[in-house]
Amino acid sequence: MARHYDAIVIGTGQSGPALAGRLTDEGLETAVIERKRFGGTCVNNGCIPTKTLIASARTAHVARRAADYGVVIEGAIRADMRRVKARKDAIVRESREGVESSLRGMDRCTVYTGHARFVGPRVVEVNGERLEGERVFINVGGRASVPDMPGLSEVSYYTNSNIMDVDFLPEHLLVVGGSYVGLEFAQMYRRFGSEVTVVQRGPRLVPREDDDVSDAIKQILEGEGIGVRLNAECIGVSRQGARIGMHLDCKDGDPDITGSHVLLAVGRVPNTQDLGLEAAGIEADANGYIQVDDQLRTSAGNVWALGDCNGRGAFTHTSYNDYEIVAANLFDDDPRRVTDRITAYALYVDPPLGRCGMTAREVRASGRRALVATWPMESVGRASERGETQGFMKIVVDAENERILGASLLGIEADEVIHVILDVMYAGASYRTIQRAMHIHPTVAELLPTMLGDLEPLG
Image (cartoon, rainbow, N blue to C red; front, side):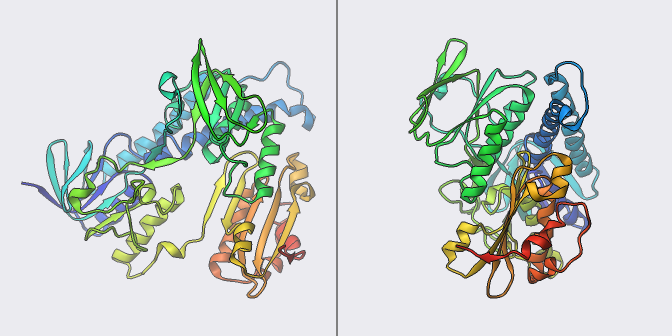
């Protein structure tokens, strides 16, 4: 006989613990099931550890540039990778243990550790015990995709998960994938002291961005000594003694390169392959993403899917927003929807890219009449004072209703400044709201009103 709960939450990524807290606060007896590590991707091998490592790498980078600021540092700058990893591990452990402690300390919450699998509608089995829930919430996240690459079975390789165990400096890291995960690790390890080559199948890095953004990011990375190989349509690897050889079918450059280690950063897949979704009548697409409606309900009654596993966003903030949408609909008589949210994310290369709304390319394709303003970071006083003038800011505006359609900010503090634009977009206000505001000097955001005074037709 199955043990009955008012609610079952499967997985403890960004949305799961918050949802469990709300469910128990509403008086519902709730079971939370975690297969392995509490906190999900963000805590264990995503945002928290990578940004911690990036902070260490940036410190090394700034120290090497000390003379540019009139500061003298005697001796060579090097990264002690064991200490770098230890710092990262401590921060991750504190966060992971905090999530677990919070869940175990909740009234009306029972925590199970083990793999959950559906054996019937709203019935799951974990460690041989069956649990039945009036409502079930799936928050199982995703993992790195491993491509069918020739020779891959012959060599060792890293993904964003197992590279977290590295406590040494790779001599030459070959990064397969020129998007967000790959580029963050590429710059990070270059700053730690590794030789790094990024291999990208397509003609541009971060292909979802506008061409000028991709080109600027490539220039920044190459300026730090990172090799970039584009148009690698066919990639194969092989063991060459103690090293790894990689064959590239590229239009330009040597078709063969060698390195000491390989990092695969070619996308993500959902952790749904072993959940027994069919037994619960839960539909998934060909890639394993659970199909949900605009309020995150699955095809099965009283079952919701949140976070990376539903294919409606692959970020910590979209996962948390999924929780907010579900809670608002269930308990607050507030019909929030996934389609209410505006695309927003950041790429944490240094300087970072802050993005919201549509790209200029998407606006052109929509056929609407639009205006654009662009401003180089070298003309931003705060950037000059900090000695970090790479990048530019770009904002696209609807010419008819004056609403901001999107922005790409590549530069110092862009990941924070982007929220000035994002909030005005959510308010549905005219761009003139920003243009007429008095901003604080000296900041990066103070240039937004100025650049919006230079809008011109988007070609």
